[in-house]
Length: 147
Image (cartoon, rainbow, N blue to C red; front, side):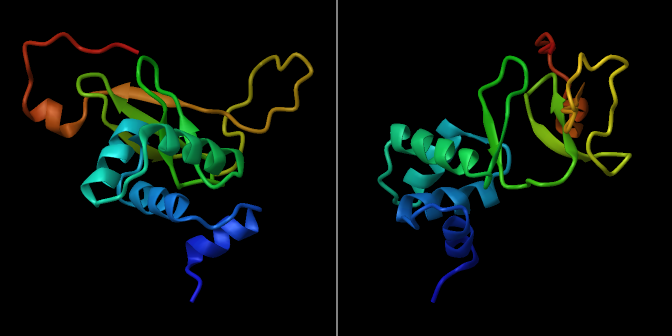
């Protein structure tokens, strides 16, 4: 019996493969995961996908619009399944943790530039930087990671 992820893949014009399904399951559990972290989670679960195969799958799923790739400053690319809405991200300057922040306006783009140089603006990506609750509760001697 087909799963919802099978249908998502087929609907995006992609073949349903064990690797694609495994990556989608991991990203559901680890939102904002980096390729290496996704690969490690797959290996822990007994999957034999190589790191290069994980990168290929992430690229395919992102190109098909099934994943969103975010790139916080000085951080590897991260992937999430939350797509199609107008949300932003908050990043901890201490540990690099990433969280979702809903847009206050609720529709895209939630910000309008004063000058768009003729572009038809469709999306605004906003990254908020701060200290996560864990780091705030356990301050360290380390210098903060700045954006």
